[in-house]
Structure formats: C-alpha cells, structure tokens
Length: 137
Image (tube, rainbow, N blue to C red; front, side, top):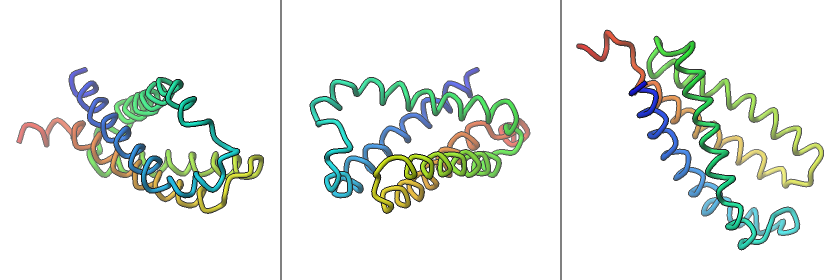
C-alpha cells in the first residue's frame, strides 16, 4: 500500500506540473486561436477542482493497472503501460477531432505531449514499483 501511495503522489505531481506546462504555457497560443471552443479563464478557474479530480482519477487508474499486472516489470513495464494507455488516448482524440472543430495541430501536439507524459509517468511508477528483488539488493 505504501508503494501505491508514493507512486500515486509522485505521478500526480508530475501530471499536474506537466499539464500546466503543456496547456498553460506551450499550447497557450494554439488555444488562443480558438476562443469559441473554450470556457473563459474565470469560468475555468471556478471549475478547476474538476481538473484536479480528473487528473487524480487518471493517475489512480494508471497505478492500479500497473500494480495489478505490470508491477514485476519495473520501469520498462511502466513505460510499456504508458505507451499502451496513450495509444488509447490518441484514439479518443481522433474521435474528438472528427466531431469537434479542434485544430489538427492541437490533436497532434497533444498526442505527442501525451506520449511523453505517459512514458514519464510509467517510468516514475515503474521505478517506485520495481520488483522486490531489485529493491532489496
């Protein structure tokens, strides 16, 4: 349970900071090109708790999946899980692109950023959940 909590906290902190960096800094100009697709800044801030909850659910699911089937594989298994989950997310983004007027480059950049994010999350969780034999040596 201790490793689960530590992995959750470490991955959550990373996802929170990465999300701010990617969405609040790197993609800021892309978002500004489509203001009609987004809530106002004040409205987003009033709903910020949903971002926190959503990110917590993503990390919780990631760590649960890792702990229930990938935990023996260490960092490599974490990275593999991250890549697999990001492939699913790319598929979801493609569906959103088909039905909502998102700029294509936002889908591409978001997918690349998501892949980097999930690889790092996988490495973090995998390092914390490394196999017992590696922890005792």
